[in-house]
Length: 192
Image (cartoon, rainbow, N blue to C red; front, side, top):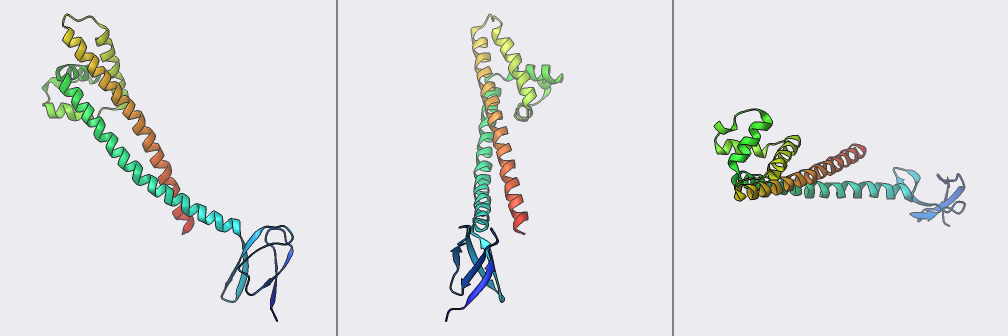
């Protein structure tokens, strides 16, 4: 003879008769699926949705961990590309960059070594980059006796605008990274 256990459906409160061999079933009253949990002499029911929610949490955490690795790599690549472009900008118009940096910061970059100037250019903030772009736009609009100087300024301006575009992409990637780190942190706290 099969033994029955009488429990109440956690979803609708309907009375349920469960045999010892049932692991999963649907409530005859409301149709919601449940998992039968047995252990230490206790029998309980868990809606399948809760199990799916735990699986979803695990999937979200794993997806965010993978995204973190990908984003960190993409950020490293973006920073390297920006540094290569900034070095190219400096080599294209070292004298002009020194002059414009002097104008922006009101200091004397003409006295610095090339490597120090390049380091300063690599560490330029977004606002300073915008000011540098504005100055090069004004210079590019001016008529120059030397066409080569005008062409050089326009090349530098294009490179500066490329850096600005990369800065925007970098900011987006960093924000995305922050969000994924937050997801992983929340999931780790809730699992503990």
